[in-house]
Every structure is written in C-alpha cells, then in structure tokens.
Length: 487
Ligand code: NAP
Image 1 (tube, helix red, strand yellow):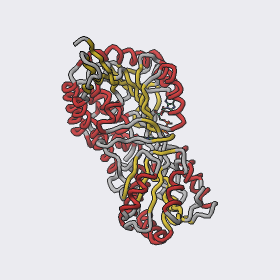
Image 2: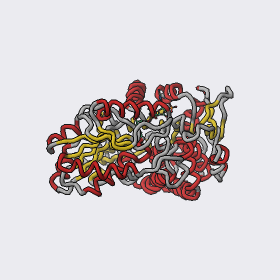
Image 3: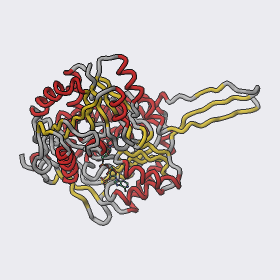
Image 4: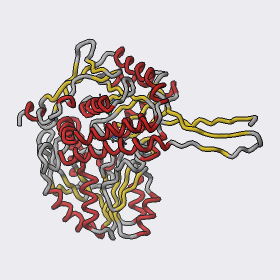
C-alpha cells in the first residue's frame, strides 16, 4: 500500500483532521504554518497540524474559562449522558480509530484495537462515576453546627500527553475532567496528534459544548508556557518524561495549580525459582514487548533467580525469535517501527553496552532504521545501562539474582517507581514482594495490569496522582468544607 492508500483506510473522513479544535471551531494557524504528521512505518505524510500562534492558544484558555460555569452547573448525570454518547461513537468508529493510531504511532493493529478499548473504557467509567462524587456530613463537635464537605470541579484544566498511547493517555484525563465538571484544553504529542483531534470530532458530535474541550497543536514550549503561567488554568495533568514533568511542576508553582504527573518508569520484573515457567514467560513477553517496548510500564529490567535462569532463557528465547516484525496495519504483526531515530539510537546504545559488558545476544540484534527486531540479551551485568535508564524499545536484558533480598535490593535501586512485576507461586513471596517493592503498581504473575477500573500512577520520580477508577475523578475535584453555625 502506498501512503495515500494507507491514509484511505480511515473510512469516516471527519476523523482525519488537519486543524486544531478551539471553542467548538476547527482552526488553522493564523500564520499559515503547519507541521507534518508522518507514518513511522513509511515515513510518508498522513496529515498536518497547525503550528498555532500564542494568541490562539490563549483563546482556547479563555474559551475554557467562559464555558466552565455552565458546564460545572450542568447536572453530573447530564454530563454523564454526553460521555455515554461519546463512548457509543468511539465504539462505532473503533476500526477507524485503531487504524489511525497505527498510522500515526506505528503500533501493531491488534494492539491499537486494545488501546481503543482501553481508552474508551475511561469514557465509560467516568460517564458513570461523575454522578458518584459524594460529599460527607461530619458530626459536629459542638451543638448548633452543621459541618459538611462537598466536591466541586477544580476549574479550567489542561492535559499534555505523549505519543506512545495517543488516545488512551488523553481519555484518562479528558473523561474524568469533563465528568467532574471541569473544562479541558489538550495538547497532544506533535508526532501523534490525530487521535486527539478525532476524539474532539466525536466529542462535538456527542454534544460536548463549545469551549468545554479544545485541542491545541504546535510548539510544546510555547503552549506549555501559556498553560503553566495562566492564573485561569487551575489544573495541569501531564503524561510524559520525568525531565519535562519536573520543568512543568516548577513552572506551575507560582500559580499553585493542582498537578497530576504520570512520568517515566524503570519497571523491574522479578522471576523467582518457584515461578510457573509458562506464566512467567507470558508475563515477560507482554510486559516487555507490548507497544514495541515503548510503554512507561514496560518491564525494563528482568531479574531471574539462578535456579530457573537457564530454563527461562531457553523458553523466552524461542518466543522472542518467533515474533513477527513489520507493518502495523497487518493484523499478524507483533512488532512495528519505533517512533523515531532518537528512539532507535537509545535502544542501540543500550544493546551495545549490555553486550560489551559481557551480555550474550540470543535473539534479534541491530535492525534497519526504525524497524528494530525483538532482541534478547542474557547474562547482563547488574549495573548495565539498560537497568538504569528506560530503554523504551524491544530489547530484553536478563539479569541473574541469588536471593529474595538481592531481588528486592535490585528492584528498588532506582529513583523511579511506576510499575513492577513479580512471578512466583509462593504466597509468602508474592505478599512480601508486593509490600517491599517501592512502586505505585505491582503485577503478580501477569504483565498486563492496566485497566480503567484501577488506580494507575507512580511514586518517587514516576509521578504524583492517580488515573482511572474513582481516584482519577478526585484529581479534578476540590473538597470544600462548609461549617454552618446557629442552626
Ligand atoms: P516528553 O518528551 O516528555 O513529551 C510528552 C509531551 O510533553 C508531548 O506532548 C510533548 O510535546 C510535550 N512537551 C515536550 N516539551 C515540553 C515543554 N517544554 N513544555 C510543555 N510540553 C512539552 O515524553 P515522550 O518522549 O513523548 O514520552 C515518553 C515518556 O513518557 C517516557 O518517559 C514514558 O515513561 C512516559 N510515559 C509515562 C506514562 C505514565 O502513565 N506514567 C505513560 C506514558 C508515557 P511535543 O510532542 O510537541 O514535543
């Protein structure tokens, strides 16, 4: 398929946009400038997005402020009905959404379908959860008083999202924000803005009023500066690198905004001697290779206890070697292209360093351009680069450990704390490790932990706040305490 045929796989044309969406209108840049959005598999052009001027971004903020009072007063069940309608539209256009995600991100179509379902799940959860933001009546400490606490929307909120899950990383902010009664302006990653714009299209069709949800595109620095310095913006939710997250937190300090920060990870996977081999291999495959390894909760460091090490290596090696690398639009592809050349350089650096440090290359190796094969290196040194930095690619390094204490020490030897994984059949090991590992999430005998129904988020340099579940809604609500006297 040439690029125009690939682009033509999006059958509902309004989903493939080349304008930003501000205050209910599709707008191009007032300076006429745009950025191309390219297909990582072919390098061809899918669409372009406007390089907006500062005044246009400010207009989106102002529109969100104008729309806020009426949206905040709209009964939660009415807001929920609009989100429910949006959910129906996402499901109706599930095929197009999946292809759009594969086109702009490169991920295999079967995983893009998974992302659409996962992303839609947040809309479903918050369509229901918004009406359950219950307050509290507090027994008064003195007679004649009534004390209560009620939840109210934080106000104008902004979302900055990454390229690795272009739809789901946005819906897990957008849906709780709108359900809570907040208005939101989103700035998607410049490499993958199309899913966010498609979401805006369907939000409009579902009846989300003008200004309640806008999508701005262009210079990240300029948009970030407007968002963080604005006294109108009361909440910033960011998913991306720890480096940028820290800068944004500092920039938000003078206006004391509410913050949610979903930042980088360096997830350890601990496979103990008593693990079920098939379960452990399945868990490692999905935790390492989903989204071509470009996931914040990817198992970055796989520690295997010495008694099971050789058996695990053999089985894992066969599974890794059997994966199909290729065009994400083909349903049987397991590994698509990496997002860009910088991603390739990082994976290659980690691979070369692991091998130079004594690691044995058992599958894969260096690929061509963005097409990097799933790669397995065993006998990796405990202090290898791939144990210290997020690889964000399809490179699995196996590191041996001796005892439970060793495993926990290695797992916690990182400033990050997003996800971690444990494979064991011992109830005691599972419980101890779930307690002792410093991370926001623990997967036991599974490599697939994400769901809209559970609180997702990290500790340490991996961030603050939760997304998903009822806790994700609270990120967009302030608790107001009222003390009534003389009653
Ligand atoms: P990134 O470089 O931090 O970019 C993320 C977003 O921030 C993009 O929209 C980017 O815009 C924007 N951005 C960049 N510089 C900015 C600035 N100065 N001001 C405001 N916005 C700015 O991260 P990435 O490389 O896209 O994503 C990978 C990282 O995200 C990894 O570390 C991964 O672990 C993390 N992640 C975390 C989670 C989680 O839930 N904890 C989930 C997914 C990913 P442009 O695209 O226009 O540059």
